[in-house]
Image (cartoon, rainbow, N blue to C red; front, side, top):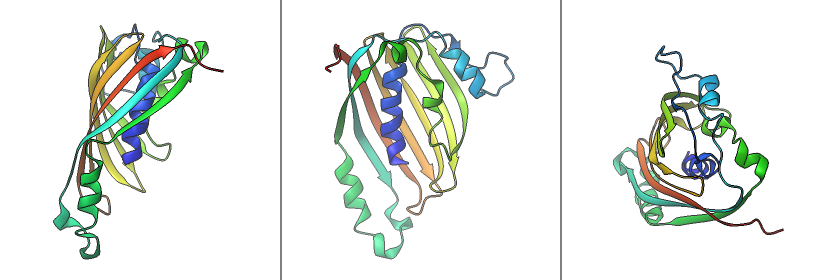
Length: 185
């Protein structure tokens, strides 16, 4: 699921934008469906061009005592080394992608069973929470809050995982993106 943090940050680069309709639970039944998320981002667009996206791992917490004995003393330092790492990518967003980002970007791993607890893109703010149950990697609760314009975004994310081989883990990350100009061909 650590790739989920990176993927989520990169996916949000394509959907952080102007517009948005607020809370996605349009029918007020307490359940946010994929169709409601699709409707919530239907009017979302960003400016096309080259986008620089960064994800920084701010903190990684793990109860090393919950690890199998052979992993203790090894996993902790590896996770500790992730703190402060910044992954930067460049992506070319076409006019078609910019005009209509796909809501499925928020669904997580295709094999995961995800449910939205809240999902709102409105008035320049992002507020999302979802829970995913992945048969391969356990349960993850993902929250994201931040701000956006048509040319940039900034988000703080928390991923709390349980049911993994390494026990419970919490990853805090910061994701930022900005349009840097036209796409290079």
